[in-house]
Length: 206
Length: 206
Length: 206
Image (cartoon, rainbow over all chains, first blue to last red; front, side, top):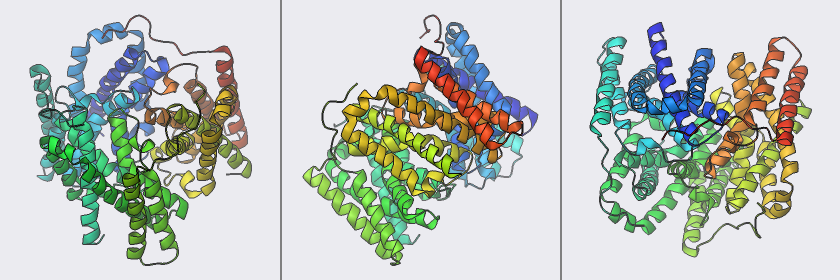
């Protein structure tokens, strides 16, 4: 990857890791639990994707910076969690940037490994939302992505836009920017306007 | 796979996906949570098997029909969940067919990838029960397969019968039919007679 | 692996499987749930490592003894759980030996598959703690490794010591013994002295 992409990737991992560490602090886990949740949240989506498309060992295991970033994010959150927790709205906005970047790089990497457009878009979504899902399962709660403001749909849309642009033969930079813009705008609108996915109507039979 | 096998495979994914979507509706997840649980329940067992035997990327990512089926099952359940929920007994019977088919194809695929008889039978069981286990973990409950009516034992027996028939040199069709029949009859009897696996006796020391 | 290493490996799987089976008995799971939790706890860490470093199919699927050991441990615990449960302190000590052995073999296997020192040490830790994390997620509780007495830190230290010794060109036996001793002493001291990892200070903002 180009140096710019690596910096953006690490920035995305950093904000994802902070969200994982915040969940751990609120569950009163010890410092190790905070670090593990920071690491799985920051790197889990990419691990899931790499295992499924057989790009193993995952890139994060071959580059020490990918391991250092979640450790730093976890320690910062562990020590300064009251301040970090109060900044959650800002963290959410940075998180939208991380999501936008992850869904695009995940989808384009899947294309590179020979997947078709639909599975590649799905892998882009998995890269974006997978870390948060692993975080919530380890923290003993139903994944937040299943509830509340739209999160997975922007990731899928952004990944789909990137894959479509790639299939149309556009240069990689254009594909990435298009997909990231689609995901980012949609996600920020969802935060700002409190857009939610539809809930089942009527009482569920038990 | 032959067209007949593909149709049966898709039918199995469809009923598994419905069981996942029903759990999501009862947990009051939004439409996206319903679709993800439908997808992971329908495809999760095969994903687990393919990752463990290194048949990646999983077949489901290379064929758009495997992605379309759980989406349709999820949407149908999301919209018509009161009706689908009332049909749960029938869904259970279809689910037994899905289990029978999955345990056999999973075991025979593992044999094809060079695993010995015992691990191959185990992979057959994993293919059959894995999707439901992932569903329950994501929905925040202890996997149903650990409790209640016999479910994993029929899958293991069916997978074992298929592997044994294969080791005896019988044609693949005979192996598949034998294994599926063993699993199906056992599972239907378990539903009908409320057979349960033994529980630990006596109080557990804490 | 040499016969000595295989015996130690199987012994480690045995004690890990007993800890998984005890959790299942306390959750009042049926005999199948006990066997699955015994198997995932005994073998899960190695599976996670093998999938991540692409050493698939995992070694445990290619050798029937690796499947037999957790079954025996599960059945023994299912039948004699009151006695086994009362021996938990002794089980914890055996568990420390299992952890020491797993973190070392996991780290050295990762080195063999071409990982750098830091990821290899991490894979050693994952091998040691992964089984217990999968056990707790399946049993519907927050992984015990996130709370209570130090568990992951000794595993990481032992794995790191083994990797450092290997990088220094020492013979494999020396690397393994050094790493295992570091992990074992640290873990036994943590049990004996009730060492805990630091908790976040101050109230968490919600």
